[in-house]
Length: 324
Image (cartoon, rainbow, N blue to C red; front, side, top):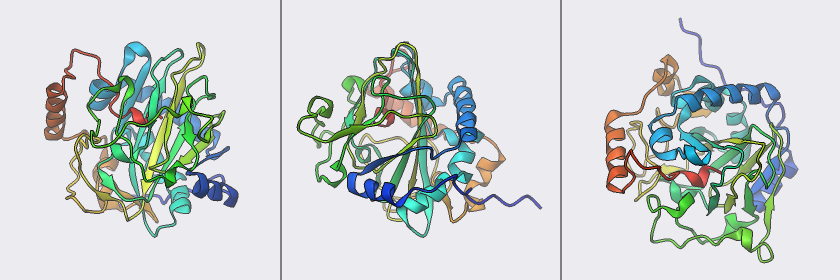
């Protein structure tokens, strides 16, 4: 008999009630020391391995190597440490504490590396316009593997903007057009309007985690530090009100998922993680790395070529809203 899959691990600490109140009021909170040192060390090792084995998205859409920016998405499908953190770590337990829903599903994760001196900024944005989903029960955990300051591209947020009705178009670094929803206005640069808005950011150490929602407006400058890289990851979880809602120029899903518009996010691409993982949803992934669908990749690469982002030019970071 195979060993049963583990349940989500208990966290080294839970969010305090004060932190949760801050999150509900502001749309974002920085929780100090939420992850233990062993988890951070494992992630550092896993990230270096992932940088050497980028997926098609990492190689053909997210990478701006000449400028010191690297990123990838759905890394858990290919690298076991990312898989185990997504499915079996304390993060599902913490997501349940935040969302309070009966079940929690894993949405996706990605990493974003800005090497020392990387000039690539993260334009101010909200996350939800980039995603082919609808719903509000989404919690993002932004994890740093390095000491972070505003100089080294620490994230900044407009406090309280999660209550705004306004939605902004998806704009990537360089303001390339691939993910722009032209029906939406561009976000103002709130870093230039600090006197008008409540802009907040934190100096962070490894183990600190920023918790934020899908609508709060955020961005970051390039990495002005000449000595320190900024390596970060975001893990995202969702509750049952989040459903598949494909739209023009949103995040491509390169793995077959079998969902129809209006279906709740679930299944092999968005597996349940709380109260426990459903074995049938992750059986293929537990058996080994699960490459993306050749059909989906082919369609995506054709779309890139049709959009002018062929294999011989440096691509914009399609998910730079989450380069976060």
